[in-house]
Amino acid sequence: MHRLRLLAFAALSTLALDACGIYRVSVQQGNVVTPKELAKVHSGMDRLQVRTLLGSPVLKDPWHPDQWIYAYSYKPAYGATRTQRVTVVFGKDGLVQSVRGRVHPLPGDQGAS
Image (cartoon, rainbow, N blue to C red; front, top):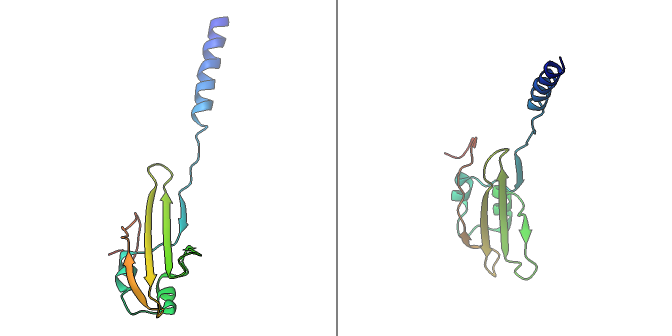
């Protein structure tokens, strides 16, 4: 009788613990820059045009005020973190001089094609 109770308790405990899973959430941080949006940024654009297209930059380096950094990270609930970084460099005239970095379409991107 004691063995039967122990076996029943073990079975119920296993079922109860199996139902207690850890809920994980996907986390996005930063600016989402799609390949389509990045392709529209070109030399000669001013700061307002870049801000209208890509949004406000995540980082503005106080020692390099002519560089805007658009950083993004995506941590899915299960899997590896993906990061992207785009740097827009403005010349002394305030116009885009160069764009460094690449972006990759993320799972579920609507405008990435």
